[in-house]
Image (cartoon, rainbow, N blue to C red; front, side, top):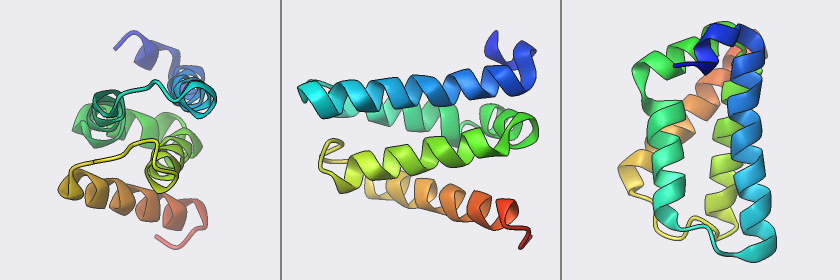
Length: 103
């Protein structure tokens, strides 16, 4: 909630948090699946946070979704819930279309 007060920059910082966690996991391999689950649930699938990201910085939302999908594809997020993964893919595709101007 505090990050929402900072608008575009707050959304950027949320995306950066995901990038930092991803980088840490890529180099150490110690990030547990529940952390990816929680990031997806809180940052991308929570309606209030998703709306904030879409309005304040849609590139951040797209980047978060892209990074989480990459974690799954690289086996870093080993066993995501299939429904959560599908919802994440949907957000990624929606933001991709919106950013490309294909509403």
